[in-house]
Length: 112
Length: 191
Image (tube, rainbow over all chains, first blue to last red; front, side, top):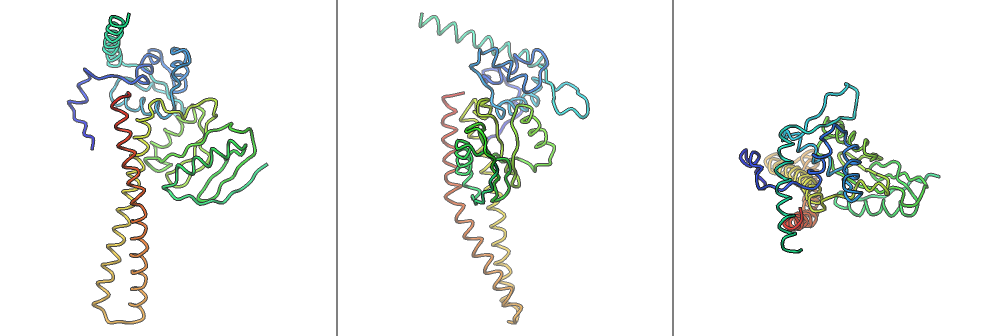
């Protein structure tokens, strides 16, 4: 059984973002809909990361719940929703970037 | 050219069913319609589409499912058939939008849904067995007549066949549990 408590949800330190989430957050610095996120991610990673529809849908729903991204208001009959990163989302990206930099730095120190 | 195929897959044979549909696609037969036990194929380019079976959390017409299906449609995934909450999806093989980015996480999500589905089914079946046994016990207190014999027959039939169904679910749910454990183990190494 998985229990997620309030303190778990607030405690984002020491947590590692998935690649899909990290790239989605980056892509959403400008508003995009689902398919746009996929294209942007593929472009940024030079074709390496192809987001699967299921993964992206799960990532978007979770990030909406956590307020890392928001859905932009759209016309009533429009099926396509556009999303954009929030201030909280930006701070999450920053924290993750610092962690990644540490990994890279230490990796280089030992290997090179 | 179109062809109809009748074939029965049990719920727990969903992987076999998916493999069968993808093999048909390799042979140049693309599924265009599906309902319980009935499949309609159209001849087309071999391997043009990849097929996937998914179990929705809620009914097809619910808000959640609609928004999920709209999202899939936007990314080039089509729904070609439906059987209760099971849906038949396809996407162009070249797009590769079914290939999960995190295999373990995907397996876990998928398998937990199926596990929930099985346990709900099992609970209902067990309730049915309990009811028919109660029925049998109550009939014992009544005077025997044609009617009580008839009801007794029905209750016995239901409890026996349902017991068999519950038992046959057992190996399947055991396999699902093993898959859950394997996926969790995988998550220890890979994000």
